[in-house]
Picture 1: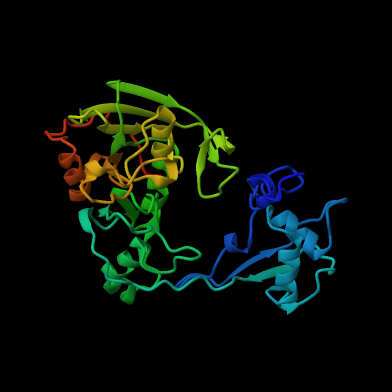
Picture 2: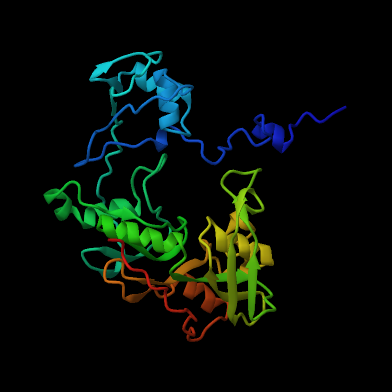
Length: 369
């Protein structure tokens, strides 16, 4: 008699390609990805229909599929039905045949209105172009579905409330992210040109980052390289796995700073060369040295050596070395190890002055004209 319990694959469900039913292939977009109308910015997209060559779709819904690749036809049909897409200023049907020169107007859905909240964070550096701060552990970086408030971005809206009151379109741009339980240095753009340049430095790896992590031992190396591609774990959408779905190259170098007296724990410094989701956490697991408190990746929270403490994920973004997005001069932004990780490390017998990280100067990065 077969088991009455479904297998993980059956429980998740699979689509025609064999992927889990929840998996969204690269390039596929949803209504949440469509441009939104934001305060102080245009509430519509407008363009004229270009010359339609023979064989190209003429139905409005199919024409829009060509114009906005990745979105489903049903999504675009619903926008047309709801009167969000106009031809020459008038509502129409999905079956309308577009003609060269017709004017198309897309009324953008209203974006989420985020509110400012008083959230404490330490400012490391600030000028008119960007701000560097220390993200506290336990805070999500940016609002998203299911997390509309209580984020670091909400805190920035409160911090810059006077500027936003004077100019609702004032730019606060998210450049990169840290996991909810990870603490450490982060940057946010305060200028569109700076936003583009900072994003470019992250995308093309023109900067250097270091992290500190408390891991399970025993650790028998002084330095180790991990080169393992990362993608979404097919058995759990919230996890990342080596060679997971849509795996992309990922490299991290780890160096051992201190070992505990019992040899079962160590403080490592990580030098990620790429910036994949959960990269350091998964690469630490790949070495066999999970990060303390990281239950998602086999780290423990309940060791007797912790003295009753239940630690969060013991990962901290220590430094970020980049070029100023406008002036171009090198900058190193640092966040000292937090008291909770330092206190737990001391309880485990890990003490001493941290040696400075071995970080090369960032590559010259002139801001785009």
